[in-house]
Length: 261
Image 1: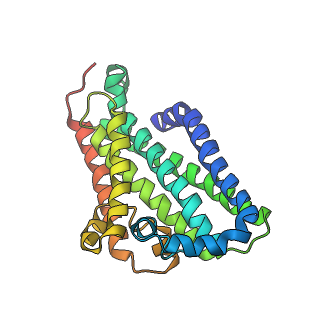
Image 2: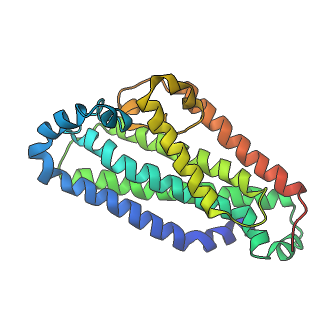
Image 3: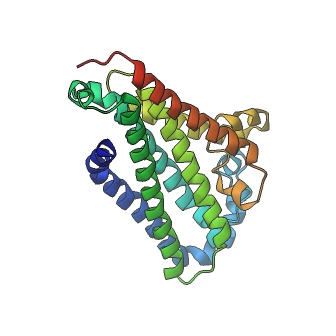
């Protein structure tokens, strides 16, 4: 597992920074809840009545005045966007980075198959995404316990599980895309993650766009849907398939492509 260990060593600083920033923001958001709780009832009514804006962010379904509604709105958006950007940027640099950094010739001279190299890189991506989410879950849940609030822990775990799957899907897709590039395209990675996010908002705004739920993972990773126990199995399965196809395509392409030294 030499490549796996090497990728973890290379990415631990980035993982540490992203975890500290996202987890820190989540902890701060939860910590602000007690000071805002008194006016939350009026804010919930206000947000729920803001028409399209409320629908776009699920504020017409979430009870913003409760700790779960507040967590899903504030912390969910921080981890939803930040985690997706981390997954996309990390995945995009794993395969294309070898050619862009002119290290492909050195790497491929070792007695290790290309498929195994790609597989170990993919495994390192999954471990880093999992580590980020565990840190963020600890920060969010720890914040709730610190302020002495009762949460629906089952719903909270299911929501974090959906966010984890979303990031793994985006990471798998970007991993596949990176195998077609000669150098890392971080703009493409961030653009893809942002586009999927806005597609999720579009579904909330217009029910006629619901077919997009099979395109964007933000549909099944939406706090309003998870907390309301909406049926999400179809979108979840599709997301798992897309992420797996992206990862598999990346391994296959990397094993066969002509590598630039």
